[in-house]
Amino acid sequence: MSEALDDRGRFRVMTLIDEGHRAALALEIGTSLPAARVTRVLSALVALHGRPDAIRVDNGPELLAEVVVDWCATRGIGIHHIQPGKPDQNAYIERVNRTYREEVLAAYLFESLEEVRAVSE
Image (tube, rainbow, N blue to C red):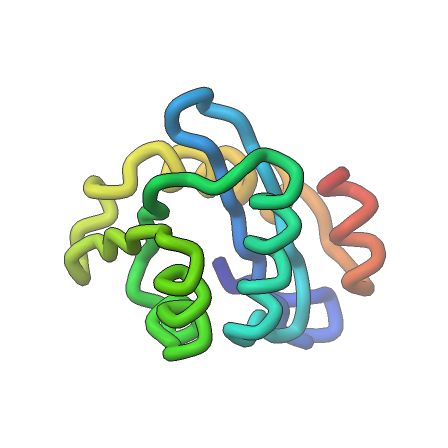
């Protein structure tokens, strides 16, 4: 997701859930979320929860990047990309994103990323 701070500075939010357990695993917030950062978050989750058979992702550039594709291939993790314009193929995360946007992002005027992170915790 993409959002703006009170001073109009943009930031991004990456939400990760376990669809099987319907549990939130991570919420990564930053001015940008490059592929290397995505793989760091995924590595931490694999270390904590174990290796998934596959991950379902949208078609964001950070998730299509060779770094992420190679990271998954090296670990034997399949990547299931949803079709562009078909968010219903990723319904669980879309529901989480909608709730997060309504209850956090739309409810506050944030002045800094630290504030976004603190409220999100």
